[in-house]
Length: 616
Image 1 (tube, rainbow, N blue to C red):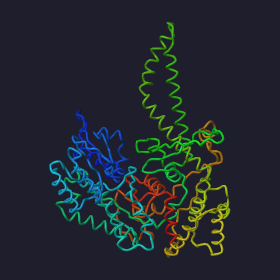
Image 2: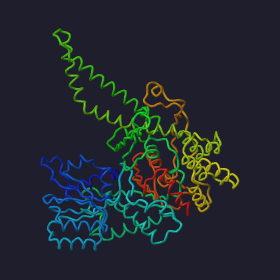
Image 3: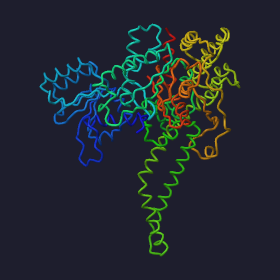
């Protein structure tokens, strides 16, 4: 059992909880016990990326309802609750007990419940004469959301409370900062309890990451000191979950690298997150309903909204989420062609089977083909699933491609990579900003901020005025720049600014033949850029710590060599960094890395936070 699989440990914990907190028995012939699941928004966010409605049904969940919705009494059915231990949730649960909504109550708290709140529930149960019906009360320690086998994020509800903006507000009070840190630590603590491992913590000094480290360390120590109730020993974890291999937890502050979250990207998953509405593994698309013009005066056609889940069970997604976009478009096309070939084969066999007449040839062909058709028919469900995935990725990739073409995202990606790797630029930055055809005002702002963050010398006031004018003319909001200016002045380190490697992506000429002939994707004019593996700052810190390299960036961190690595970014993360870490660790045998962040934002959401910080 590899303790790096956070997804499977969380799924296991949830299934156990839905089975009244006893491990589900494999292949038991009996029907599952029918029950209702009551969750709050936090519980919903934790469960929805991991268990599908079908899986819930297989586990006997007939209804899943939000705690604060109007629910009817179902007196002969047990209810499993999965909620945060907040005042209003507990009031509502006490009300449920008083109203005798269900046969029995299994109360599971996402995060540990306090003694006083537990007493409130006990009093309500006594008052409602329902003590015997409250079957179990559990602290689940599941206060985090897992999106991939190697990626988790702290929260989705109320994420603005722990956002980059919240941590970096100039007017933040000590108590507010404590609350934010406690929220982050609570989730990280839950994460390590679920994994059954006590991390060795490393962090940079003098940052929010260090505050998290100190608090987490204290919480882990307190828990271990109380041997009887420690969550890391004995049966609390179920057999075999506790691992003596201690993972390394590297806590990184978002401020070490503000360029990457603004960077235009070129890999599939990061692009989907950047340009589409992609949230907790679900992407929402607006489908245009054809281009036929409606008669004059008619209402414009409504766009269909479609949502798709991009999960770990989607093989195409798992294989290609980290690939450069051109490769993805090509693979979708290849999958489509292989599917069509299979489909044609089934059609051909059917038409042969329909042969009339008694001639010898047909009969001998028939016996031959019966076997073939049987195998073709038995692969039908597989074929249909393949078709579903091809349609899904054709739609998603087409939507991404529209953005790339209309905003010239390939040009931005290549140009920013050159800025970040200090290569020579083939076009002046002013020209890029003033080009009306290239990108949205936000794209231009992102590009300029990356230039501003990565330049060793800030541009002179005269140049800066010129850039500002061009940006304003292009319709940009300058608020983020005023924050980044303060930030840069504040973090004027003795050393040069963060470096991002020194290789720009290489264009591969135009797309291969597959893409040019009869493809779904018209890639004309889009550059076929190939990524060069270079380590982003977060990956580089991990590399220095793991390989014990001496480097000014990480010399004040302590040393050791664990096999399992956890990187956690305080202040928000993104898919570009996640992908960079995954690509990096592929080359290191026997090592596993996990990426976590206090929130997951794309560039649009991050720029919004920067501009709120810049407006003050």
